[in-house]
Every structure is written in C-alpha cells, then in structure tokens.
Amino acid sequence: MVVDRLLATSHLERIVVLAPAIVIGGGLVLGALILMGRAFADSIREFGHPRLLIAGAVGLVAVVVLLTYLGVELPKE
Image (tube, rainbow, N blue to C red; front, side, top):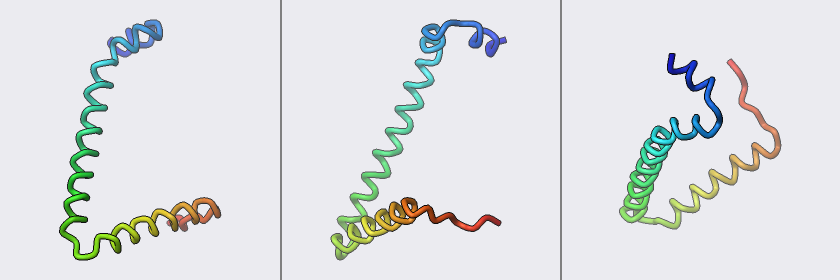
C-alpha cells in the first residue's frame, strides 16, 4: 500500500516523503565516519613511527589505484 503510494506520487512528493530517512541515514553514515576517523587519528598518535604508518597507507592506496587502472581483476571462485 505504501509502495503503491510512493510509485503514484510526483517526484517532489517522493523527496518530501523520503527526506527524513535520507537525513537520518546521512547522519548515521557521517557519525560512523567521524568515529572511525578519530580512532584512526588516535592510533597514529600512539604508533611509534606515524610517518611509516601514513606512508604505508598511501602506498596501499597507490597500489590499488595502479592495479585498477591497469585492469587487473581478482580470480573468481
């Protein structure tokens, strides 16, 4: 019944109906990202060589980007 109502409404009405879910969902995602970012920053502070940790993270991202650019795919089961 609710799905039929959402499908029959105009685009603007659909946005108004879904706005609370979008705001709450966005807030949850943002809160989780902030929490993980603070935990990562705390881990860097406690690590003996923070430059080594950051260099490793940058290196890992660079390898993933390079392999993606080259079109390397993981084997499928």
